[in-house]
Length: 237
Length: 305
Image (cartoon, rainbow over all chains, first blue to last red; front, side, top):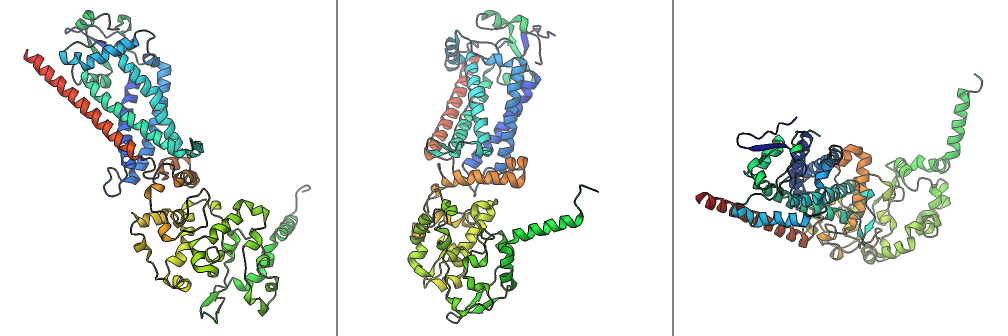
């Protein structure tokens, strides 16, 4: 039940990240690091000074890729069952204004010590910029990455020719290209995770599941803070 | 036990089946009585060399010609023993069967013969070079029927090496100095690795969908690494699919998916994209680094206030 009573420091704790989501997130993170390291080793293969020896990189990449694809399937099922998918659906109105506001905060407000324009709540735990980015990452780039990866493991399913090229090559290039974009996302994601009230705040939230919101700020900035008092109950959906 | 065949009936049926299917094999058995002996041969009075007349019956039984009777290709006179001396000058020609046979039309023999005539071997050696110089008809097996790619590479490269790695055979055909393969392939990185996994003819024939019989002279052979290690590599398109399927049959589904080694190094690389990705990654890290430094400075200033 509700354990979200404000503390003496008037901090509201929200249980935003259920156990299944945290397990998925961190397993995904470890697999991604393995895939990036082995992927770069194979792409820039150099027999004289490899990051990871080619034979090891090949097997590790295949193994981690299959696990990542299975995890992605798990994520889709978990999202559908728990209702987590709703956080990824952008609002019909005010999305662009919200994105602009969040971008302005990152580019200007953050240096002036302004408060965060949006606070997570159980109804909307992503700010508008996160919402757009995560939507593209999880529902466009990830299916492309997993799909092209599966086609490289089962090249007989790939089309014979794509735009005049042998069918395997476009799959391989798309796989590398999407993987590169997701690597950039990972770097930006890691950095932006440090922009909480404290540098480690968001990392701790993703480990413990609880997100802390300063109650005073919430009161000051009630219009944009999408905090829903009814939704302050922990849930492992 | 009415209704069940007796044991002797089964044996009789089996015997009749074997007799009816033996066909060419039983005719060949007569020839193999002598020609299966590994030591059978004669000393060529002109060259002074020992010419082997041995035919391995097991290898012949696996070859594409296994259904043929010996005298389908050789003169019927060889069906008698002792062989008539008039047959000593017999010259066989694959084209007698292959060019006219509509069942073999898919091999496009007229085109293949044109390629062969233009090959460096025929241009330099003329009549001294024939189909049999590379393809031993008693052993010949079409490459695509061999499920193991590694064996295909070994077999096909073995054909080339039977002359090109043997100074004796090489000098018997040409007066040229015997070229040492290691020296002539010094430009090729990891030459031994390539020779183990790639056929000589992949680089020593023009790039065509179907393997060409126009063997190129050394100076015209492919020396451009990106012809294979690049986008749209013919090797990638053909070999990658084949290798993956072959690995699945050899290793089983799960192992083949994890352990498959069909990855062709560099085939996904594009110099422009590689450079662009390094620049974009650098700019991202630099931008975030500067942003972080700005935050740190701003916080210090605000703390100071």
